Image (cartoon, rainbow, N blue to C red; front, side, top):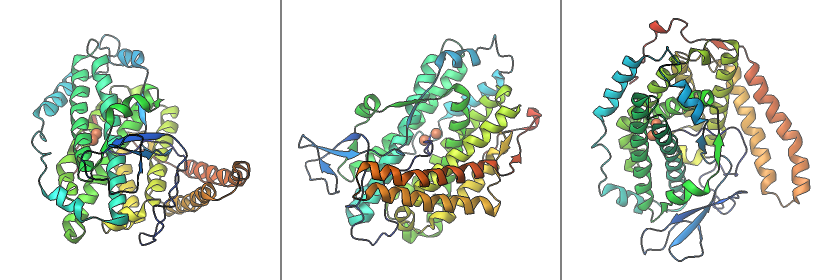
Length: 407
Ligand SMILES: [Fe+2]
Ligand SMILES: [Fe+2]
């Protein structure tokens, strides 16, 4: 897992102006606290508040922080029972398993001294932006690790091949999360993943929704990583932290994970071949795309910091992800219609107003009253985007569909 799958909820307000001096002092949150451990005796150099213990710092978690997911494991077992489901193409899963066993990135995630040196050079807002980027990415990767690990465990008896693939994907995600957490150590911080596992609330999705959401998460993650990698290769002056150099091989893990979910969906044609599947496909595309766009527009400073135009970057990722997704989903959104982007941009404006209310000095009742018309406006934009004429897609004849590695 690489991208965030949270559905749409407004979160903390970030300035889009990286030079604004109040950038971090105006940041407000409204939910739970996640512990972070300082990993060295040096004082943490970020603006995080100290926790009760001297060696702990605490961060607040916002509503769009990547979520953890759980599902109906009994239904999963039924879906992957080869006695019940004759669509399960075991030879295709065997081939995928061999690919995962090859473990192309076994020796890829090796750090060097450049990391710490680069982190030490980062100061002020840029440093804080990077810490947040590492935290969010680590949480998203760790979320994938937990879900895949549990699926690997639960499906062992029913379908050992699929179960082993899940376990090997959890290996990949653990590696990704661990590498990002090591990155946090360059900033004298570390996410307390054990605490996170116990303390975070888990969002329940039925298996078919796990398939749609996770497929999209993996593919959008692939496109995000490869786009950043290619951009920084062409513009090395923005290469301010070496983790991006690892994205080329890293994103191939995400691509493989996405291809595995393609194969899973093909084995469950009931999730792809009727009108309900088309409605759900569009719903999940919209949820994932809008979440990314609103999230990223709140963090323009990060993308500007590495020389990207946030909206251009997001639209490129959306269009490519949508084209990839159209190979398997029975319907996708018409994201290449300019009206779709206009709608997204209007959502950003409304979301900024909602977030500004959260930061105002008003009492909670007044804040809520002010939010009502804006939330209604946001919901109506989202609905209008959902109702735009979709693009019919997918492959009715699954034999024609072959997963492709996209470089
Ligand atoms: Fe990952
Ligand atoms: Fe992944």
